[in-house]
Image (cartoon, rainbow, N blue to C red; front, side, top):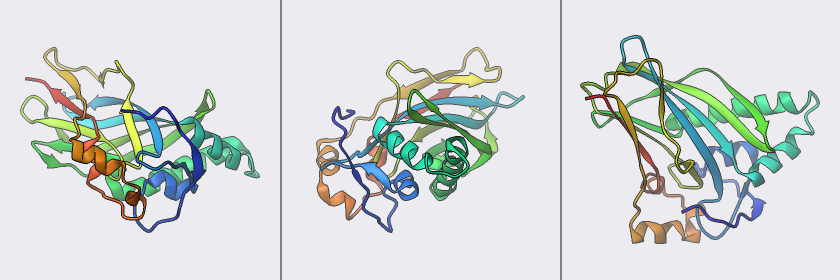
Length: 222
């Protein structure tokens, strides 16, 4: 589903969400259809001492074009690139906060509010901007008795966010022997695909489309 051609351009300012990264950096790759940016994901489920899901650790690796633009801007920072990258990560997390950090976590079908735990870390990896952070659930989930799932996505599908092919979701902490995870791939309808190819989405963002193209991670410990 990931497009092979990524053409750089300037982001048109908008009062809508259109991707929190665009709002922060002011630059994304734009084409005639969504998505305009790409993020390679890694995630890990954090368990507490009672075998309950307490948090989700995430790593985001941004695409080449976005990373190049961000590095060009960071090079102008008076305190150096490293300081600039750290500041950009903090700005990004602040802008993601109203959108639950682009993370839809559910317990028995009910959406869970998330809070950032600690600070985000960021660096350049093979010329790409990388960021890692943890989001915490206010009350842990017991996967042995409660259904738990999560999805990481931009609601407007301005940014495409997927785990790498073959990636598995691991646990941080000692998971019971019967616990397993599964990444369910999206299966968007023909109408959803047609909508994603509409050039009107940039002027009139649809905050429901991203979920249709998002992976869903299920955790089962039964």
